[in-house]
Image (cartoon, rainbow over all chains, first blue to last red; front, side):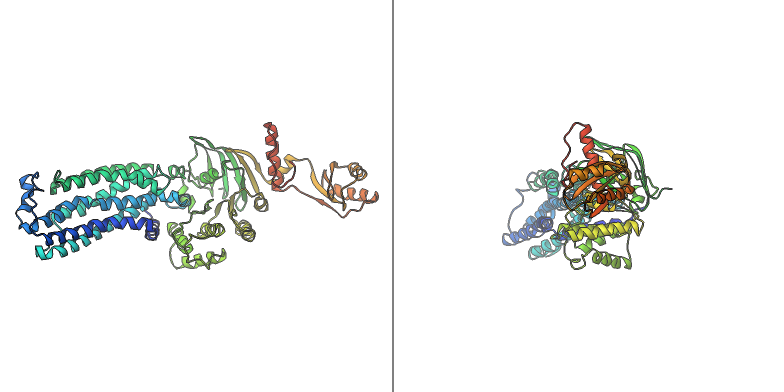
Length: 269
Length: 327
């Protein structure tokens, strides 16, 4: 059966318009990307400019030599900037698509119940599968857009602030490329897939966010691990992690699609 | 092929109990069916089953010749629904809510704007069309919900409490609109409501549900015939009838019962043709007769009589009649 794209984009457009008007959704959704993608690289760049001789060897002490080599081979004044903005922020950045997709998915799925709009939607002629697709896109597309625009802002800020030290454009690196184009969409899908499941068990977007927040913790641990040098994400590992996340997300999503029927949904009203 | 609604043994079970049990009824095209009953009776479950939102565990239904369980998507293109909560997105304006409904129904093009404008004006929402729904009164939401349910000119309308929260003028307008949709435009309407007055004005058939079971179904007049022997009438004597006047009336052939009322007497007679004899006897006995009016039972009378008899058969005290009429 063909997808009714008019109906799908109708739902997507309505969800996005409604979200943009909801400060309680928009502010937290944009605060984290601004912090991670603008303030943090800006502060690091300014700190590196203020103290150009900071040694990063101690930070990289536990990292295998081959992995640390590209950074240690750089001039000392560039090492901190490249280490933080080029490597350590990359996994931390995954919080952005995860959080945005989770927040929007909670609003799209559980929010319909909370606003008492689900039943009238189920009485409309949109097909179950098209409705699921629409709700998926309502969360996935903004998550990707925020991530990618956030990354563009990061590139501008990181290179701009570090220019007096670096004298060249040093991000995006290949690791960033993999993170942005491969891992970030996977993480957005994972957050969404989890929220679809969680939303089926909750009655408000806030409840869904609280329950779904557990998903974000492993990613934060991964990021913290990365920043303390315990776990270094190399290019092949990043690709592998992306593949694993995609697999888990798609598996969860498939289960979500199967359960996404009018009969099941209306029972939650 | 039946263009209205037919159900046969329609049953839906829930983990907590029966949602609807063995519902069999038939509504012809252009008729209004009133679904009546207390909260939890199964009215909303019936609407969900008939519109293919819920699937039955047993039995089947046909709406516009389609099986809602297997052709729900196709059916919902031809039906309109006003849910109890209207289901509008508070963050959008009235106009945007209608645009949204139009798009998900695949209605696009330049005619949409004109149709939306026409409906907003028709339901008195033209002036606040571009204001967010947040802040709208319950009545305004209901009217907007009704406008949305009519957007695609549906053949069957499911209306869940369409007048709750409306002021008297808006209620009158909505009742008249629903009536005209059925009588002038041939729409089949299922009206789930607690308001027996509006149901009485609109319904061709009534279905009384209680805890998922169909207690009574049919045309109100037919149900009344089953419930009562003959016709009720009221004789206006300008004052409570005296014992002598009551005896005069009781002696007329075809009078089953007679009781005094504040304005005269209430009697039950075999038919309308008995009333002239009653009037003649009373006049002959010197009583001033200002009026003798047959009072066919209303849907309310039928509903409360059914409830009273059910309560009596279950050994329960009769439910209070909110109209103040003894049951």
